[in-house]
Length: 259
Ligand SMILES: Cc1cc2nc3c(=O)[nH]c(=O)nc-3n(C[C@H](O)[C@H](O)[C@H](O)COP(=O)(O)OP(=O)(O)OC[C@H]3O[C@@H](n4cnc5c(N)ncnc54)[C@H](O)[C@@H]3O)c2cc1C
Ligand SMILES: NC(=O)c1ccc[n+]([C@@H]2O[C@H](COP(=O)([O-])OP(=O)(O)OC[C@H]3O[C@@H](n4cnc5c(N)ncnc54)[C@H](OP(=O)(O)O)[C@@H]3O)[C@@H](O)[C@H]2O)c1
Image (tube, rainbow, N blue to C red; front, side, top):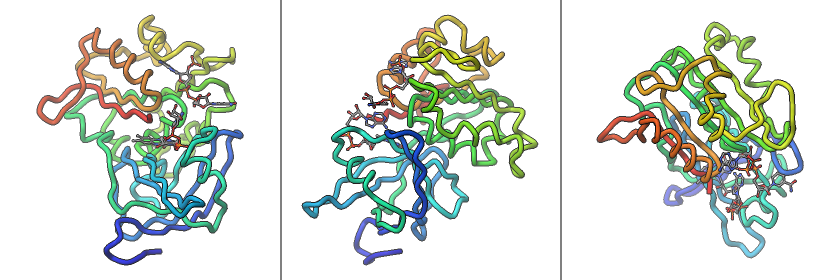
């Protein structure tokens, strides 16, 4: 669906909604004609409020650049201006999507590398799911380590998608490259690590769990989610010599803060 050419956004339909917990859900919309993006980027979504104004927020695409729909993964913030309205929407309702794609959490941030570390908290896993639906990712890296830190096991959204890459018709030949490390910090669950990502790196537990060392030559590290996690993890990595990757000086780290 489109609107007049001078408007900066299109009106799209919600086509699918999937609740994970009372505070977490995923949804799909029709894909705006001409909306292109690179895996890892985000869109700006708009909801019409009851007073007629529009609230806009950044949302990473979960879906891949080649999917016909757009998929997003959302928290519901108690009293949040945007998510209170978003949460009320139903299949068939309208969502506004800015025509412009945004963001720099993309593989082009790195010049080269062997091991891709994708470290996320909460809904911060979203861009990494998009990155994993891009064949380029699987062709570029020898190992892909996906870490998802949540408070409780029920918040490990997309677990079946991630463990299902081995059966996926496009990805199964590469699926052995993926090492999925769930982290559950407020429950003791077999099969998941239980300390914060920062501590797991400091103690070497994360490298042990992956069976792969973090090193400057081979590791390329993306961080996404809670800004304190991003900041503190970057601090831990910087102490080991890792540097944020910039166009003028390539490094090993790329980050996105969600608030
Ligand atoms: C680049 C970028 C990409 C983003 N992608 C996503 C995404 O894919 N999915 C998503 O759910 N959110 C994402 N966000 C956050 C999103 O833009 C909104 O902040 C979120 O929808 C809450 O909006 P709100 O108006 O209800 O509350 P806000 O007033 O925007 O936020 C209120 C408070 O809620 C908390 N909060 C906000 N977002 C989150 C979150 N995602 N997880 C945990 N706590 C949060 C923070 O404490 C924040 O101060 C992204 C943000 C940025 C900057
Ligand atoms: N009412 C509810 O039932 C409910 C449920 C879920 C979320 N919420 C609310 O939603 C908001 C977001 O919750 P969320 O669970 O999605 O996000 P979150 O607080 O960012 O927690 C997600 C994961 O990130 C970890 N983490 C947090 N700070 C970190 C840091 N500095 N370094 C390393 N790891 C860190 C958490 O570990 P720790 O467990 O150690 O913090 C957890 O494993 C919160 O305000 C919360 O109150 C409410």
